[in-house]
Amino acid sequence: MERSGRIWPHIVGRSRNRQVLVLAVIALVLLATGGFVLGLPVGFSLGWIAVAFGIAVAAGAVRAGLVPTVGSLWLVTLWWFVCPPLVGYLTGDWATATRYSYPRALGYGYSTAAAELRGGIEAGLTSGLVAAVLIGTGGYLIGTVTSWAATQLKRRG
Image: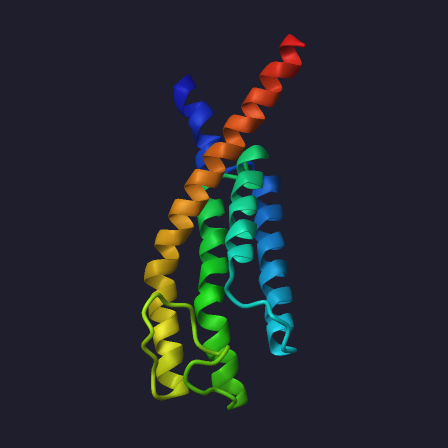
């Protein structure tokens, strides 16, 4: 019983930390959406992967919970895939191979904005979940281990 008491906070997180994590990620996504709509270069990049990894490490350090961490990162990856084609669809500025296309490894494109949006949603739900699980779990573990090591060093020092 005692063992599950130590694991459960890592699964669901501490209430306050979990709420702060989710609200911070929602604010980040809204800010990025506003920047994208204004034409700022906030689309998919290695910087976003670093931000997602940093979120996961910070969540692990404060024990915000693995499930909320992965869920929050899934929101970020959904943004990567859905926001650009959604903005292109809503504004009517969509064109093949523009900033309104979602990130993909292959060089194919869709012929309509609606098809691009559907493709982005599909990719966000599938590839986005895989990315969120991998980045979230790895970052959360690193943050947890780093926090634990810092606590141990303080006790000994």
